[in-house]
Amino acid sequence: MAVDRLRREISEFLQFSVPHDTIPFETHTVVKEHDHDRLRITYHDEDSAPIPAFLLIPQGAGPFPAILVHHQHNAARHGH
Image (cartoon, rainbow, N blue to C red; front, top):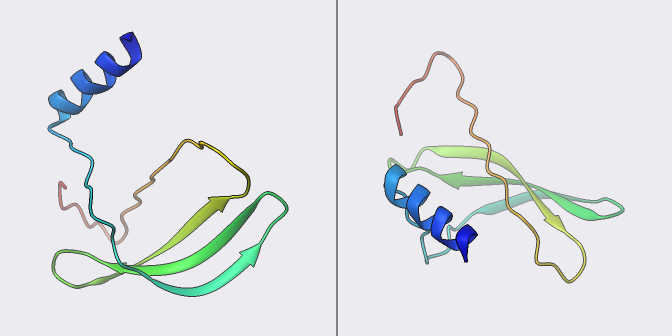
């Protein structure tokens, strides 16, 4: 399928691979919305620094698309 080939080519170009391990995180709060749950979580980077985040989990059978948004602050530019 053309979409699968395109995904593979983009992943190879970006030198990106999907990790198969789960990333541990701590859940602080859960808010139930009408079509998803919103979790406020913390996970850790490679240096064990905590990273606060929101994790939105849709309700229903899926499959659902995923979106990841990184937003750096305080002029932090790590190039990762």
